[in-house]
Amino acid sequence: MSGGSMHSGLVGLVCLAIASAICCSSVGSSNNIMCLESERHALLQFKQGLVDESSALASWKSEKDCCKWRGIACNNQTGHVTRLDFSFRYINYTEVPLRGEISPSLLELQYLNYLDLSFNDFERIVIPKFIGSLSQLKQLRLRAANFSGSVPPQLGNLFDLHTLDLSYNYDVRSENLEWLSHLSSLRYLNMSGLNLSETVNWPQSLSKLTSITELQLSSCNLHDVNLRSLASINSSTSLQLLDLSYNSLNSSIYYWIANVSSNFVHIDLSSNNLEGPIPDVFTSMLSLVTLDLSSNQLEGGIPKGFQNLCSLESLSLYLNQLSENIEDSIETLSCAENSLDTLDLSFNQFWGYWPDLSRFSKLRC
Image (cartoon, rainbow, N blue to C red; front, side, top):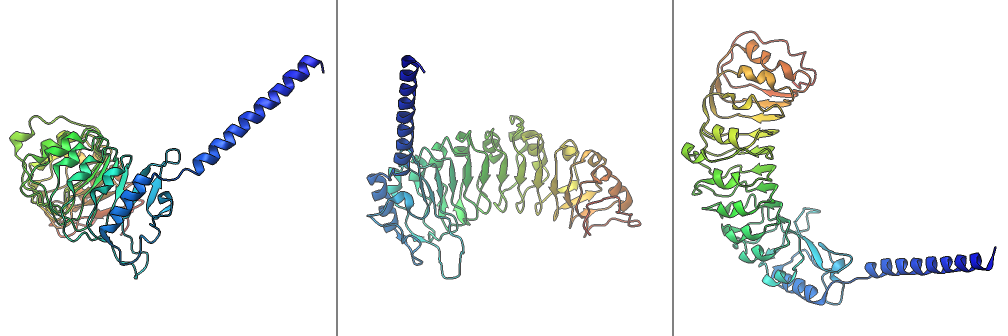
């Protein structure tokens, strides 16, 4: 090897060694990043407002790195707290949910993108307005946490939110859902169990959620839809799962369903006030997998257009007033012979001989 080649080789080895040292040094430093003092202090203030009978927050001590506390996750490059997950789960029978107040000290967590306080017991306090100022939130889950009062419209300021679960806080109400229309990134919304009986023009507000794929509003005391108010609603292709069960909706809801999406996979309209024949609105939903229209006052038979629903896996028409030759009804489902596994036609007035169902290869008796 010549002197020049040897010199360049040595330089290359030195550069490689330096690069490796820098690489290893940066990895080590990222692993050693600790949470910021201001954020640790904010979390300790949050802890002071809570009643922790099970010592679930025992790891939350002032001298400790808060990134290692239970329920906390941090950005491993900046040390900022990004996740607070304290949804209560019955790990064993000795643990009890958290109680108490939610301290506004959480506002110090400016990079928080995930907040879950589900299944705790906040003893009917109001959902804090300041949560609407946690501008980086992408997921907010407060399911069954015993809140009360009105949903703060400030939640409409969470422009990056893609998951919102306020369900089963039975003493929470909302008279207006206009705040929802600002959440253009929202993909999952669950407000089941909330009192929406005074909410007007809710279909318009929900129709502005152009990214929504899953919408659950079961047991919300929703009433009839004003057909005139539906005229300006544009169709969206995003919504796939819709649960409006256990409300007081009449057949006008079909018109909203027809306009709001063309890509439904699951629809649940059970336990409402639907009357008359099953409309043709479902027959063009070729992606439909689950349809539940049970516990209504539907009449007639299964529409002939159901012959197009080749992906259907579950159909429940239990407890209606349907009256048709049972063989004709089953024939309309022939396209789903290889997919249908659940069929409930009980407590209706079908007549005729019970057909052979053996061609439905997945159907469970």
